[in-house]
Amino acid sequence: MSQPARVIPFDHQQSAHCETGVISNLMRFHGLPVSEPMAFGIGSGLFFSHMPFLKMNGIPVTSYRILPGWIFSRFTKRLGISIRRVTFRDPREAMDELDRVLAQGLPVGLLTSVFYLPYLPKAFRFHFNGHNIVVFGKEGDEYLVSDPVMDGPTRIHRSALIRARFAKGMPNIKGRMYYPTQVPADADLRTAALRGLRRTARDMSTTPLPMFGSKGIAYLAGRLRHYERRLGEKDARLALGNLIRMQEEIGTGGAGFRFIFAAFLMEGAKLLNAPALKDMALEMSRIGDQWRDLAYQAGRLCKGRAEAHITYDHLADKLADIGRQETAFFKQLHQCAKQL
Amino acid sequence: MKKEEVPQDDANMLEGKFKVVKYALNENGEFEKVPSVGWEPENVALSQAWDVIHERVEAARQQVLKGDLSPLAYHMEKNMMDAALLAQHMDLPARKVKRHLEPAGFAELDQALLGRYAEVLLVSVDELKQVPR
Image (tube, each protein chain N blue to C red):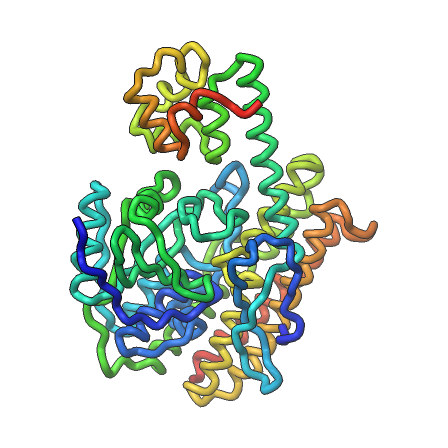
């Protein structure tokens, strides 16, 4: 059963985060050049939440972004892009549909589990069913893959791709695939960027309940303070390690996405002709640096190598301080965005 | 973060396969993508997570050698699964998978089910029946 090789000319660019990277790469293919930070900002991806009641592998979920898939849907909605999104019950059907769309000359976005992607380094391959990649061709039994976190395109065998597309667990991804069906030639990036900006400022400043938005950082700080007493030394270290991994891991981009957002603000300052946003970008970058410091000290504590003054109390103080700065920052951004 | 502050703490987490990119400020005050080979806190957090997994795999291996659990338990842990997740992959009730984790339950498995377990757990049927000594 040998089919002719099919390779779609696809310009792969490496990115910091998978979802925004796929958006940026797919849009460029469809004639709408959008940088990764711009995709992140238009999709209003930045957020904060700490949900002690929602646990993954027994550890409370902390997230520095909106839910997986939401950046994509907000982005496409704000620019009037039509997307076809499908899931499947049967793996064979899912692969046939992928082949059919590739045969039309269209690159396809896929949701996959990193555990089943053999080309990724082993250390990153946990059961995480939310990794976005683009498939842009097929040669024999191998598919050509643009994985946004990698520096170049790669390949995956059909059987491995089936596993990765049909991994079970949280969430059940059921072979989800998606591709733009129509991208308007006159998409209005300025309006979309402004709407994305306003939404992030609003989400961070006014979302109710203590665990969401910038005030959620203080909420996490309050809980972190008691980790060692409540969980014991070993589990407290695990919870702390998890916090770092959520903040900074392959596919999450860095300092809880604060630097990507800063890059968006910087680009937005030019696009919207709003010099005030440039100052906000630099301020966001400074706050990002403090997230990095926090992770650095937390890492020392995890490893049992911290100097005596670095305790859970100390980390909680630092986190609460970051929380205060972000609260002020997003309030200011909220005001600033109203005037644009 | 300035470009020169982008961490380059290599702990071979990326196996030299590629570098990740991070956004940092360059000399013109613009953000650009800067390659990084890794970052100390992330390396610590990752190896800590793997230590936990390796501990669980080793504990399962010991229990299999003692005869308390079937080899399936070892291979399940190796795939970082629990009975519930394995059951989903097998399309079986979790109660049945739990039964197969016991040596007696495992002994009752027919070739077909053994084959399916082996496929899901990425080993051959022969490998599935044993653990490394």
